[in-house]
Structures are given as C-alpha cells and as structure tokens.
Image (cartoon, rainbow, N blue to C red):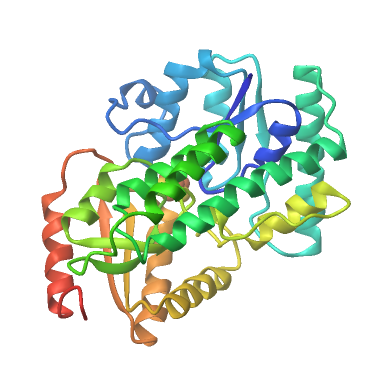
Length: 349
Ligand code: SF4
C-alpha cells in the first residue's frame, strides 16, 4: 500500500482524505535518538527540536513515502513548509492550510475549501477518485481505531498499564494502516483488560503540554511513580477523544470533527482547551496536573501560564516542567516530580 506521510504539530491533518485515495497516512514523529545536524543545515538550532527532528526524519526517509502533506499547526509547520519543499526529496508535497480560529462559519468554509484542494491534488498525483462514499468508509475505519483507543484509555486508571504501553498504542494508531492498527489495538485491549489492578504506589495525573513524540519521556514519569491516566496530547486523547460525525457530506463531517477535538495551544480561542482539561479532571476524580513543554515550544510555553492559573484556582495541584528533546534519562525531572508528589502526600493523596 502506498503511504502518505504528514507533518503537523498537533492533530491537524485529515487522515481520512488520504485513506479515501487508497493511501496509508503516516504521521512523521522524528527520531529523538538521531542527531539533528541534517535539519540544522536549514533551520536555526533555537527552533523547536521536535520539529527539527521531523525534518531530519523526512530528509532521511522520504524515499520510503509516496508523498508528504504539511498541515498548518504551529508557526514552524507554516514557515517550515518552504524548506521542506526545497530540500526534502519526494514526488509530491502539498501544503494544507488549517484555520487558526476554530468553530466560526468562515473558518469552516475556509477549511472545507482547503480540504477540497487536497482532494484534487491527491486525485491528480495518485490517479485516484476520492468519492463521498470512499470518504465515508474512511471515516468509519478511522472511528474504529479511535473507539478502540477510547477503550484502552479507560483501562489506564484501573489496570497496570505503564505510560510507555499507552504511548506505544497511540503511536500505532497514527503510523500503521488503520485496519492493522485496529487489530493491534484489539490485542492490546485483551492484554490490558487481563492485567493486575492499578498499582497503589503510582500517582494518577493528567498530562498536558507539548506533544510527546518519543517514549523515553513516558519512562521519566514512570520512574517518578506517576501514571498519566488522562491527557490532551495529540499522540493521545486529542486524537481519539471525539469520533468523526457521520454526515451526508463527509467534508462537513471532517470540519465538525476538527473543531470538536481537544484544543491545542496553537488554535484560538484558548478557552475550549481549559474546558476539556477541567472536564477531564472532574470526571476522572483527579487532583494533579503535570504540564510540560519541550524546549523552544512557544505555543505551549505561553499557554501554561493561563492553564496554571485556572487549574490552581480550581484547587488542583500543578507542576510545569521544561524538558530537553532527548532520550537520556532526565534525573532532574524525576527528582522534581518525586518531590512534588511527596509534598502533596504521595500517591494516595
Ligand atoms: S513541540 Fe511546539 S513548537 Fe514544536 S512542533 Fe509541536 S507545537 Fe510546534
């Protein structure tokens, strides 16, 4: 099956359009273990290292993809497109504008038009015919994966599911062909459901902030005896919290879906972001938020001030960390997290 890789900074790319063209969408995640020197030929090294790693990944692996779509998330996806277009060798590269403002009629019309342009570009490049029926079938397939992730997510709070296992399941959903991902997630549901109860030594938290794109950070939380049982990350709940509605016009359904997902810091207005977090805290009975941003990720760094104020005003415990983009064990972060949880009275508090 041909693959269409995409570079976005949250959950901006409508994978179902690629699927309707007979392509397997693959989210570009970068490689935290690879040196960023290839990308640093073209990007300043004070830019977000995750996005630089994604460019390094594309420079190394674009030959194994049949094309790339860059979807507008944060500014680095926006201005980075020109660099990708010039330097990444690929038979097809397309820019998808995604509105900064979610939920207005003009944003909906704009995004629908952008998706129509993507449909036409894919049809031309891959000699495909993207019909409403194919789009509806792709939406159904996508929802199958999202609903399995919802079931897995719920098991995080009741079963012994390490942070890394959850992260791996979410990565499968965005990197494998959807029918293969659904099968892999079915296996995980069976496995997780049979696991021992949630360990009493672990603290349940909500995890927010910059997207986590490598498992080693999840291990950092684990070493601090913290389990993220809720989150609003793109390799996480942002991807599956809502299902794509079934509508006569599948592009309208994709617009409605995009505006309904847990809001990233890159979109306006910001209030729905805090609404989702507050609802998640309340419905899960959590009292602690772990927020983090990867170094140089400005959208989430700016946003944390607002989120911290709101969470603390509600009486929730809140810690924010700035992390390096590195697979090396972050002892300082582990110590800070352990001390923070200890000060709150430990896992049972
Ligand atoms: S980590 Fe932040 S700066 Fe980097 S790509 Fe994501 S949103 Fe953009």
